[in-house]
Image 1 (cartoon, helix red, strand yellow):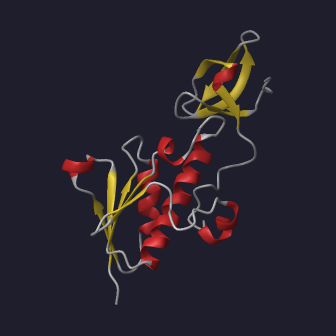
Image 2 (cartoon, one colour; image 1 turned 180 degrees about the horizontal axis):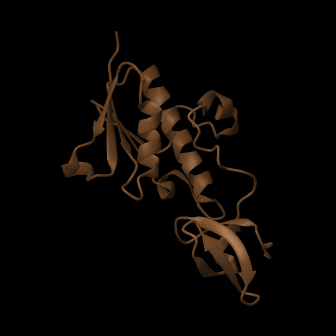
Amino acid sequence: MRFKIGEKVGFLREVGGGIVQSYKNDQIVIVEDETGFDREFLVEDLNSIVGDQSDILSSSFDIKDVIEETVSYGKDLGDITRNKDFWEIDLHTHVLMESERGLSNGQLLSHQLLEFKRFFRKGREKGVRKLVVIHGVGEGVLKSEIRSFLNGKEGIEVYDADFRKYGKGATAIELFYR
């Protein structure tokens, strides 16, 4: 695949992306990353970012707008563990998807947030008292987005899940009903 100079690209083997600056040869592309540094990448280690994804994390995101576009899980919601006292979901992309190949970081994050919102809504519908969301540590973007979504919602308490079991990579949500 040949990228155009100025084209937005995502990195397939690491977090991040950038803008194509030039070509060193047929196989190596010079990309300016998010920090402003020019870096060399093999062509096959990049993918195009189509369109403007700057609004992907907007707080106005509503699951009802995209629910028809997602695969229906029927009775199950993917890799959810339903314990007697709580539900747990692992949002790591390697758990949620068969392959991450060809997807930008923004697309991966969007998919994770969609799965979380579906999980949260289903837990509320079923009257579950506690949800545990495994988001991992990483750079904290997914955790931040989850907490931002939950911020201000009534009838819930949000805190870090049990450190002994999950480390720093999970959030617990207690739901209170009238």
